[in-house]
Length: 321
Image 1 (tube, helix red, strand yellow):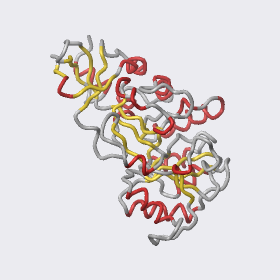
Image 2 (tube, helix red, strand yellow; image 1 turned 135 degrees about the vertical axis):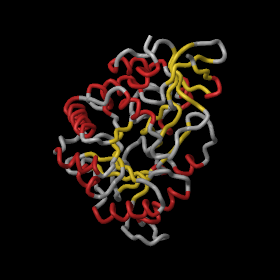
Image 3 (cartoon, helix red, strand yellow; image 1 turned 120 degrees about the vertical axis):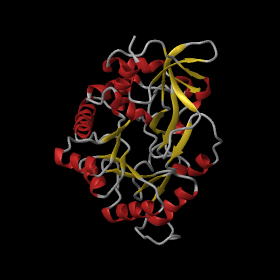
Image 4 (tube, helix red, strand yellow; image 1 turned 60 degrees about the vertical axis):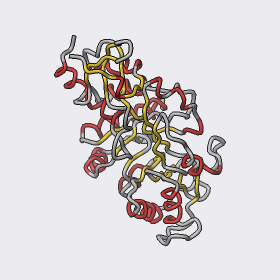
């Protein structure tokens, strides 16, 4: 059996051999796992904890409904409504009710201006948002101009909130990177980005949420190539599935993890994509991930191994010597 030092070298310092206090089932404990891109109004969240996910980041929903959520599993951080250009994505999509988006009609930094950048950022913040989401989708209608994007980013940062962007279409990743956006909701998939631009994003501390498995064909290949370059440049990659987009099963998505592994995000770096608490300062408290059975013997085995993960109270875990 792999020893503790080998286990932590493979999975990171948060990995520990344990057994459950009730029943004695043996396995491995990890920090809580987080899916950094979900849409709760489009999916059933009740099965997530049983399938390994302790926390989620909702990246586009009704801020009022999200603010009224009760504590429970999974722990939820959220962006509130999509902030988009008038007539921009996703205003014409059946899956996006009116309550889930706001049209930014002015770059005004003054609070209280109807449809103004500052006003709409303030609205999401007042409803408890931990991150602000902007839409830069050039293939589906109007896009926020650079001045309006700058105003949103500036106001969000004044409120202590990062900004995450949906980027789709040629040139949109560059707009987000040059605009000081803190994270991308999807690894860029519309084009192969040049290495210098990717390095700029990595050096700036930008995070990229993976969502590789939602694509096929050229988009999938381009996303995989971009995230591989970003990871090699030292960029921070976050695991995310866009849960609610299509018939995706709740819980750890082993296909997404396999795509990340194939792109070179492997071993403890792969685990880090799942356990980074962003945009929160700390991971969900009082719980841990438990993966029963023998630990993986190699990095290539980690995606399949995590299929057995489930969320358990920390008090149920007993260290195993």
